[in-house]
Length: 261
Image (cartoon, rainbow, N blue to C red; front, side, top):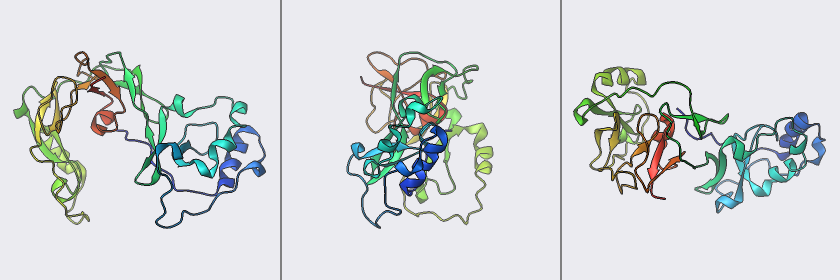
């Protein structure tokens, strides 16, 4: 499952252009100067506009994000035209965001009007795109809420600062065994469980839901209806949003989330 692309630590800008020059044949000495290390405790951004996607070179899909002030985009501006197959952030389906004062790369939300039974295809960066993935629609794993159970999604579980999820009751033991937990894992030891959340059967698939869905639009504290991959289309006027930042589980499954337009 894909989550959003990881953020890479800040680095010396001369190395950035050296990689770009290797790709496009430009001289590395044109790289802008930049700090080697972030000032401890200093925020590198105040808004998304302060950040931009970056990568191992100027020709391939970005894999992390940097502050605009470090000059990555400016250094690549004259290089991209020489790439044999330039992979722009838009083509790769990614965008830079400012999260808690740090620049991070994330999949860009996309409104998609087609219903893909097998789920949606991914870009080279692992983000969902409005094109159908190959294969057959996933088989339903539940018929009623009773077919699903709540289980920890990691070795901590939400009761100890981790997360919970829902799986078919028949798969619960295998799911727990697959986590490989031995009881010695360090956990925050803070209960972060969402009140009222329960395992439910949502359009044939088990999901952890905190409230009833409303047929497509945002469901308040609950989990909204999903689209594609066997979930079907969103009931109007809701639209199907891929890479919804508030529904990472849908993105991991290769499906979208129904949202109000």
